[in-house]
Image (cartoon, rainbow, N blue to C red):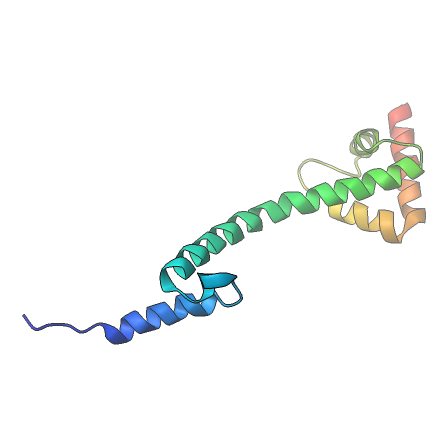
Length: 125
């Protein structure tokens, strides 16, 4: 069997890793072995962070809604409970979601105040 020389593919593979490691500190962007370890770890962090981003944004939206509710004399949990009882927010996905509620709390304070009033009326019943 003839000998197969793999220099071209080896160089391409190494260049790809070193290209992905541009900007890394110290020898992590120069030496193939350390660069490969760092790039693989970076890919793991990126994978994890793509999933964490969803919960991070939900936490941010909840904090914004809570701040808007406090300005209108409600807590977040009472606000969501009131909107659920009023049928504005539902667990099945229909109605307003937390992203839209947080946008309303920031940009449209009058509409958010009317939602707070709706929640208060639903809680009083």
